[in-house]
Amino acid sequence: LENIPTGTIIHNIEMQIGRGAQMARAAGAFATIAGQDGAYVIIRMPSGEMRKIHKACYATVGQVGNREHNLISVGKAGRSRWKGRRPHNRGVVMNPVDHPHGGGEGKTSGGRHPVTPWGKPTKGYKTRKKRKASDRLIVQRRVNKRIKR
Image (tube, rainbow, N blue to C red; front, side):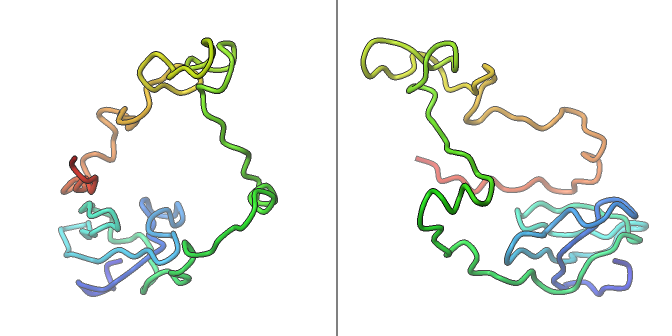
C-alpha cells in the first residue's frame, strides 16, 4: 500500500500483513486511498468507513469487475439449490419445537420481538464484539444508510 498514491481506487485489501485479501472483494467493489499516517495508510472503505491499514499490506489497483452481477436472475429455486443455498422458511410457520415464533392457532403473528431460531434478538441487534482489538484502526465509523421513516 505504501507505493500506491493517494486517491487511487483499490480492491482485494489485506487487513493484516500476510493474511491475504479480506476487504473490497465483491463484484464492483472498491476502496480509495485517502492518505498516509505514519506506518499506516488511511482507506475509505465501500461502506464509507475510514480505516487505517498497515502500509506493508498488499492491495490490487482498480475496481473489482462484473459490476452487473446483481442483475442476473437466478430464475428458479433449483438453480439456487445447485449453488448450495437452502430454502428460507419463516419462524411463524414452524412449530414451537422448531422456532420461538412457532405455534399458535391459525395464522398468528409470532407473539414476541423478532428472534433467531436460537432465541437471539434479530433486526437491529448489534453483533460486533465490544472492545474489539481492531477498533483502534477505525478512524471514522460508517454512516448508516438506512432510510428514516
